[in-house]
Image (cartoon, rainbow, N blue to C red; front, side, top):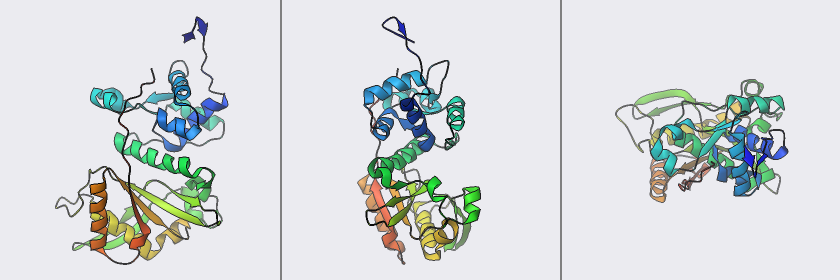
Length: 277
């Protein structure tokens, strides 16, 4: 690429570019606005670096294939980037182990999950404790230290059927450290209104069953024995206040203990398109 007649190089060893790669290594799919907020750099500066990092010959990042294959989605949503195999190799080379993107996951769900998780880092900064750090704690059972598996075994009866499976939260568990030195641990569920709130006769996942499953997690204390967490808050994000209130009402109708350990929040996308040409 040239600028003003002079060659402009891609600088993957420059700290600012490495930090961009690390952002995508922590959250797998992000927009330029997300990366600007995480790195505290200007949007224009981030766009300039993204434009170079996605070009040949290095091609450290790429626009998500779902957007490239869908003109409507490409035009309506800000471009979302992820690491390429070269970007992953670069981070491994410097000793940073990136989260691996699940290419089979739904694009908007993956993006929302990444953005919600990133929003905690932006808000908490040094007080955020990522799951990778929790794994190093002496309180963490050896089994999960070795496997990194954060799924939780649940067993409960629901509408006449016995449910026994492993519940996998969206993203990785994390904690926030407060000024008094106490920690609050979280798991996340991202709702995009693709699941029914209540019972489905097709045996599909419902919000009702998820709420009951997490209530079982809280009642059994499996978060202590499996993750080594002293406490747990279950955070559901959804797209509208009306949906949020419906989920709250559903939880209240389910009843039982530990309902105060659930939290709900609205998280919606900014659909303005910002191109990184």
